[in-house]
Amino acid sequence: MMFHKVIRVPEERIAVIVGRNGRVRKRVEQLTNTKIEVGSDGVVTIRGSANADDHVLLWKARDIIQAMARGFSPKRALSLIDEDARLVIISLREFVGTSPSQLKRVAGRIIGENGRTRRVIEEVTETKVSVYGRTVAIIGYDPQLDYATRAVTMLIDGAPHGSVYKYLERSRREINRIKSELWMSDY
Image (tube, rainbow, N blue to C red):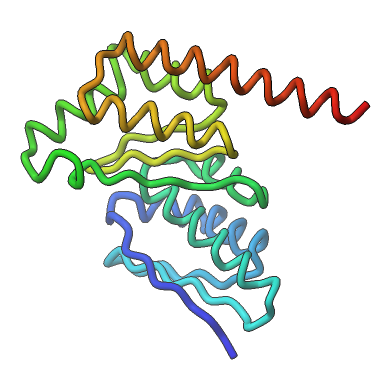
């Protein structure tokens, strides 16, 4: 029995998913043991076998395709092949509605001047952030992913950038404390 998943992607992202001479698509197929069909209309079909191990790989293929569709480069999206890596997609429409000016304003707050805010979130939480269209996508590991998601939602809700930076600094200390505890438990 075969399982499949259908994903709609923006037409301008199809070339990224396919890659030059189909290299990206083939690489995702190799890593996830799936078969990927990309239609010119933006419909991507991912097929996998009924094998239990392949279910996880089917989900990983889905996440990789969704990450590329949400603005990540293939290299960044392929980091999701790690079993502990996760993808979180936040819909800006759920928070601010459909007003193009509000969507643009909130996306600008998350990106920050010259990309500073996005870069700070990525560096402090060791995640990858993409603001694309009406969504914000984050790739990372727990608990850093939770801190990055919280920082983004704070910005969406209108929190001052200073408050978000303070939150991120507290998060950095917590992340470092957790890492040191893990390191100490190894010895």
